[in-house]
Length: 108
Image 1 (tube, helix red, strand yellow):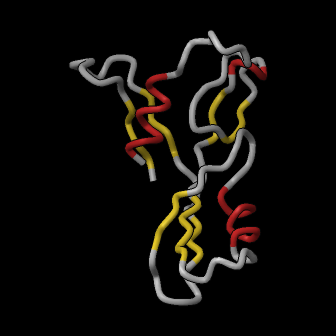
Image 2 (spheres, rainbow, N blue to C red):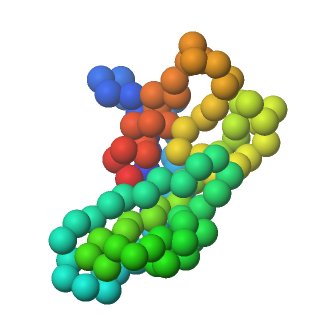
């Protein structure tokens, strides 16, 4: 699935990036469905690796949704592409947030 992300209120198409999200894995409940959790993987990972782990948990009434982030250039890695929900510029607390990437992940 792709999403043309933009910051809220940008008012136009200029600077808009398209993100191609990977496969979404779903772990269906083994018992009566009582809750759903959307599980987001970390930098460089994918939803499939987590779905395999989550299947083994003794939580039979939980439905797990494990989407896979798009592959995108990561500033922290010198622009090398990796699966990520948003760009990571720096690991410090005062590093700038990638609002466009965050908006696209939320919309997905």
